[in-house]
Length: 148
Image 1 (tube, helix red, strand yellow):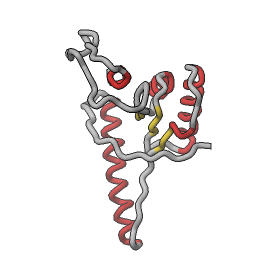
Image 2 (cartoon, helix red, strand yellow):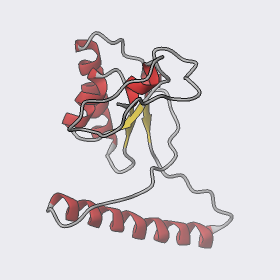
Image 3 (cartoon, one colour):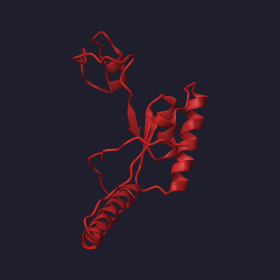
């Protein structure tokens, strides 16, 4: 619905069982046509494939190894090209944590804090995969970097 709303110059009503909104309109209308670039956070083969086929930009997670990141970018590239979209490495962003510390003690504390956060996120992820609860989290800021 978001893509349709951004690309539409007129009001529309989505199909009924999915949503219950009438005459959706985006104000002000986007300047970029058909719509602004859309970024999708994805890490599974299925979500990366869907992202590529729809022509969306790809946000990769901060926990994957460099080898996994390379495999995911290769999948994204293959699926984009198979769907008739050109591959542009600037359409891929990878999240990574960066810490700047004043001294060794501050660096050590930041590393410990990040380890706790990482362990908590992995714990939530494992619980989610096992069907034990929902995960709600804010999306971290990501920046694009060239992929060669």
